[in-house]
Amino acid sequence: MKYYDVVIVGAGPGGLNCAEKLSSSKLKVLLLEKNITIGPKICGGGITNHAIEYLKLPKDIQGNKFREIRVYNNSKSATMKKKDDFIYTVDREILGQWQLKKLNKENVEIRTDAKVSKITKNYLIVNNDEKIKFKYLVGADGVASIVRKYLKLRTGFGITIQYILPTNKYKKFELHYDSKLFNAWFAWIVPHKNHVSIGCGGHPKILPAKKLNNNFNIWLKKNEIDVSKGEYKAWPIGYNYQGYRFDNIFLVGEAAGLTSPLTGEGIYPALISGEEVAKIIQNEKYVSRIMDKIITTNKLHMRIMNILIKSGPLRKLEFQLFIWAIKSKLFDKLLIDFLL
Image (cartoon, rainbow, N blue to C red; front, side, top):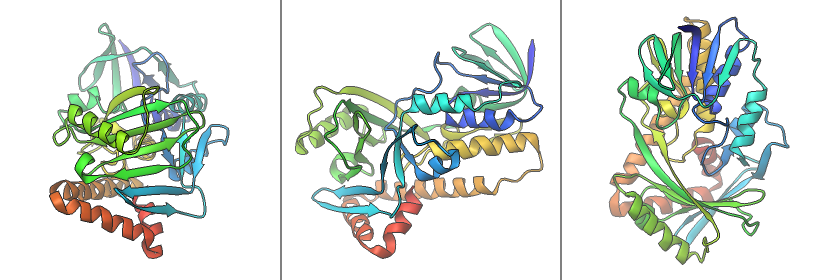
């Protein structure tokens, strides 16, 4: 049976960042990715300036840049804006491959096409036949995390759908709130360099997939958006944070439920939690203050989401107050910093 000090399950932004921070240590690390290629993931493709600055992401990897987000509530609208760019687009495969190249691979072994089929407290089984022992296990394996399932933690998730259209027609980053169609969530238009992502999200208990699809089609028709030449994609988003350390087992990013239920932003929390878990593994006495901040923000976003869900007919008014707050110079920057 092979032994590793740390086994990381999942090579997304959080898992790769955790591996990178451990690559300068003397620990023997194994990074497992169930897919053949590291990087690709279905998502809207937005990334915040916090993540860009944290990664020091080269300009040739950055996609489109925006210093404005146009926010709609039916016929009313307002623009969130800053002097500098604060929201970007990124190709997830390119991002993943760039992170991979940053790894010092002397003490980090990377395996793709490696699916974890069983987990115990001290070992796991890969591809149904190979047993691997570990001291620490890090679950960075996303919304369907097998590590989270082993820990018997409830998983809360939203559903998102989108069309990828090969067009440069759209130039603005847009969020469209419509209480009747999307409840507490929204539709988006995110222009990339060679295509646009047009999608929406919802909670399956409130907006089942079929209902969400129907409502999305109504919204598309109302906004005269033709998606007949687009590629349809759907995927879940994991939230419901319940902790990130469980003795010798850790969860990071979406596996920990750190994706914002309010905005869907997940890359920055994944990066931070990946690094902080690496620090704890190397120093048991380390106390992460930034994780406290990430968790507090996540819980606050969840509270706001729950309020919006329970508001019923008042939700339309709440969205209108949101539009008013954006128009107010006093609240505009505060809203951007809080949400993104």
